[in-house]
Image 1 (cartoon, rainbow, N blue to C red):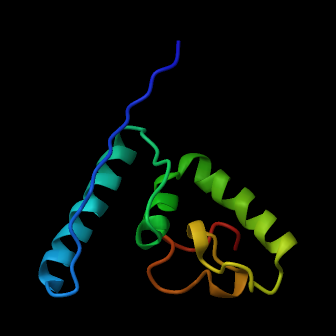
Image 2: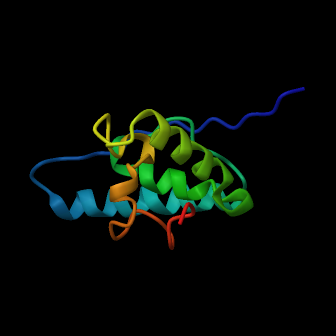
Length: 107
């Protein structure tokens, strides 16, 4: 039998209140971390959180990330197709501060 946990949420974001936006952003990052601590993965997320979601899949020294990076490098060696989308950064942009939890797993 399959088990699933579904959590749907809508968070307010406005152009007029950057303080509220920052609070919402920080809450979402915390929820991502709590979910990761319990072994729950995200299915979909807005682009602003895709790097944080990818960091949550750290099993086996980021095996999934290393696999996806190899595919990205093989199919798009110049990194011009959707750079950074879904947390997949081209090889020449992986060391940008804040993207990875440490050194890039492929180095």
